[in-house]
Amino acid sequence: MKKLLFLAAVIISAQQISAQECDMFIPLRPGAELSYAYYNKPGVVESTAKTTILEKSSIPGGVNVKLNTEAFDKDGKSVVKFDYNMKCQNGVFYVDMRSMLANMDVKDISNFSVESKDLQFPSRMSAGQILSDASLLMKMSAGFMTMSITVDIINRKVESVETITTPAGTFECYKITYDSNSKVLMIKTQNHIVEWYAKNVGLVRSESYDKKGKLTNITELTSLK
Image 1: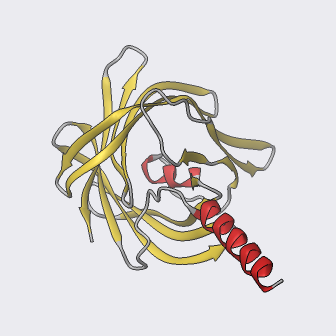
Image 2: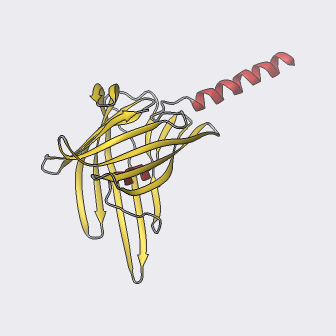
Image 3: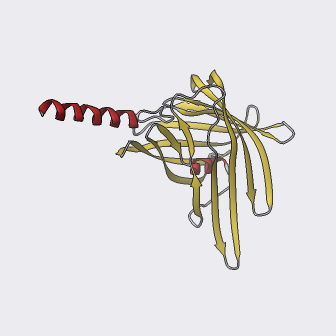
């Protein structure tokens, strides 16, 4: 009987460990800071942002990480600040779509209701792998008007594993591409996005191209503390 109980405990423990295994695309150390620069033209900083790891906690099948991001204009003035979560659960890493707000022209999100379908990064990604879609919906009512912002991320694909160098250092990254369709009021925008993600770091670089293939925006990790 003792042997059976011991075997059952080992099996349960192995299942729990397996459920929690996944690649983390964020530092886990509370207090860690990631700084980013946003460029409309190469070498010309349009704005910046700082993401701070606030805390981590255990959840069923994994771990949850609470973060804070603050975005600044080109003069260093704070324009928006917000908290959100990322988590590893049952072998999948989830990125809250609210993380995208740092490079959107939104000054105050306190009056918006937010619905999102997280970005997902399964463990053991490989070139050619198709990833799930993601979305963000923000709504704010003002009198008889309802302002809405929608972002739909589709056609996500792992292209390759590449080494990327930024002012923050050199990182081995997954190169991921997708199409982003956004709508603010009646204005629609379509972009093709190329991004590089490193394990235990997160986003290292992002390039946005318009529907004509012109490079319009660059996001780059500038420091990691």
